[in-house]
Amino acid sequence: MSDVLLQEHLLLGALMVESDGQQVVSAYAGLDDEMSAFVNGVALCDLSGITALLIDGLDGEAFAHMLFAGKRLAVGEVAFEAALTGEGGIVSVPLVMRTGQHEHVCWDLSSRSALLDSWAGFLAQVEQRGQKAFPNLGLEDVSDAFVPLLLCGPAADAVLKDYLGTQQLPEVRHVASLQLDRIGCIVATLDQGKHPCYLVLVPPAFARVLWRSFLSFTYVTPVGREALRSWALGTKLGDVVGWLKQQDRVQVPRQELISRGLVRADGGFVGERGLS
Image (tube, rainbow, N blue to C red):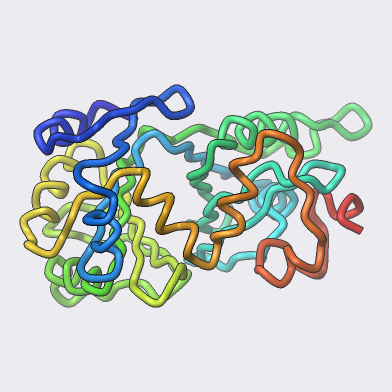
């Protein structure tokens, strides 16, 4: 976790634990109290420390379509997509955003983020007949460029709309650049359950301001990773959360991955033959 919001968490009495080499908030209060925020108000979770990779350049689109096995995203779309090994095993299932014609950003919330980072770096250096397969590719870790805040719950719409004025929240499975009280943020609308769920990417210089502002709503509750993990197990990606906790090779049947939207039926990605 970055130090941007550390003092804010300590002021709230957060219990800090080490997870994958990072200090993260385990909990602020009892698990039941934090879990209730997801269904009765708004749960606010600081996801600082998760890995973000920027893929850009003229070869960025082709590389992203090879690395990520899910839907070929249009500009402004987001989706959870599988990244596979050559044998068809799951490397990870990051949230992929297409933020430009030749630009994708993926955010990996799992403990497999280091594996995904290494795998993407390896594929970026692949050569064919002595030449790089993707000579015009940019691949960069941008984890510190934003502070990712998750807002989930039945009142999440009401919280964000209070900042928007005439702007509109992005549709489900879409991302947009928005001004939240004149703070430029990137907001993605996730499709994870019956209640609204948003990933808000905030510039570090304004993270404390927005964090405190969100908490000024009486129905917004800060939640730690323990509550977030318990909530995630009950969402559409609940089984995926379980898969990604495994330390060994994760192999899932092709048809199951297709049915969950994590793999596209028309192929053209690393690991396609392994799945077959």
